[in-house]
Image (cartoon, rainbow, N blue to C red; front, side, top):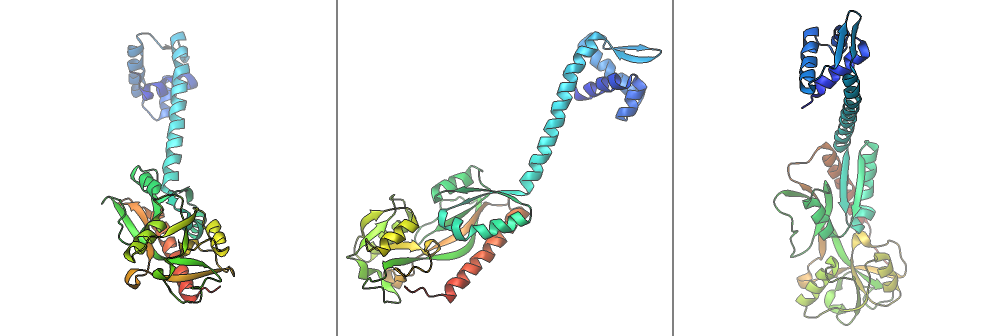
Length: 312
């Protein structure tokens, strides 16, 4: 089999015109050049270089082989360049997954911070099952995920989840709803209301709602389905129904909407716990920078929630 070093020797002889000059070009002794040339000619079973008083020149067979040697060596050069670029880019890049509401308020400031540090970020938005699958199959380096009362994330022990914040689930009511004046609305006070819910039975907020209502002895009746929180709030404001939605998904400062904390079973606060999931033991400096930026933004959001009481 041909060797790259032999191709380099053949090319150096062709360019420099002698074995001694080829050795100087490559940093080899002349005996080393002669050794590689002899091995190459033995493998080719034909002379590839003519030696003479004026130096060395390639034979026709050598000229033909040089065309392939040049192509092979150029391809190797390109491969080395692309590999170095890939490694450098991998060190300073992150593939991040997010679900929609976290992608709107929690993640953007962290991505902005990473961009300032020269980190290339690629984003993948999806619902929780998709994000978990992409984590397991190494299509993501990190993902924002959430868990809810009574539910565990289906991630194995190979993954680490770093908590970021608790995102309360709150009631969206029309501004003129009979319960809109209350500081906190018992779930039982809404047993006769219609609910605007998600489009699939998997919807995580709806699952909490159905679980909490069952604990209170009733089943919520849906009057409309949508996965768009802006659309949902518009129809709540229009009096079509009421809804449970995460605080991260609530549009602020709507005068036609009342947003109130809900008292669940045994006055339990309904919420979802948001965290960053990464493969255990693989956190690099870039991932740690992402985690810190997310923690900073989570603290900022939580402080804002504590300082503000929403009213219609």
